[in-house]
Length: 382
Ligand SMILES: Cc1ncc(COP(=O)(O)O)c(C=O)c1O
Image 1: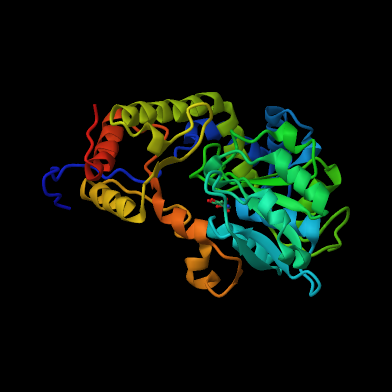
Image 2 (image 1 turned 135 degrees about the horizontal axis):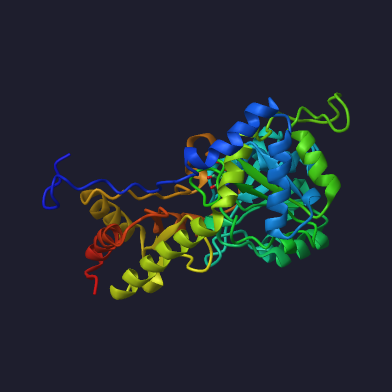
């Protein structure tokens, strides 16, 4: 592609460029699988990954369940907590400002989504505002989203669940390194996370379920294993959403190298922060320098400014993403769904732009990205 003014040799900077454990690091685990001849169905590597992750989080292994994807983790928790939808409570309240997976998991359990607006600061549902919603009467469960790996306000949602008597599940897809699992296990709110390649800690495809209640995790695992609770008898609404031994192998190798991977994420975030500050854009850039987080977000002052930034980024071969689109209510499949007024979602979604992030993004790439962000704003890197 010829790029006027930027040189034809410029390599594209993708929005996300994952790196998972190399073949070499996987090999010992793959050899174990060859030896075991156990390929899925909650085998020995699955058990070991569960135990090691529980140790990593400082919780009991009965409080952590693995799933084939983050979507499956959500599905397993909804089925275990609320079962399938019935006519008395057909709805599940959730934000429109999220990735499609949140609502698809809800629908897979038979519920109709009821989209609620977000808070302008947290970009998440506001428990105080939601508590006053009359439509809660018709909701069997509330699915809260912790957007962009930002840690959820667990205490507030635990209090909400206790006061309203409604089960709450947090879709904390990208929160592997920001979630306080010990805090999760102190209260009634369950958490689902994604181990997709685009996240930080990854098994390529995978998910984690966290809950204080051992019985709940047991039921959620059964909901992802044909409803087999204690014997080979389908005892509950369910699906097949198990993590295979091969994916568990990736997880074990990923854990071996996690400390270094985590530092790489933080290093790139710090570089982003420093370069943004040199252009006076520190307030507009959101990166997490303390924890591994797969997002670098630019907060534009308006939709037009964001669009101008997208155009300039594209001109210099840099990809960008509105990771949650402009809200699910603007996507074809969900456009006819039930919703409350969504003025904040409508205002904010077109202003939050995902910039490239990868654990090995170099300073030259970051300079290219942020020069292109700064230019339509009439700024330059210092
Ligand atoms: C907010 C949110 N929820 C759920 C998911 C689904 O996770 P997975 O892709 O592992 O199914 C994602 C994935 O990107 C997400 O961003």
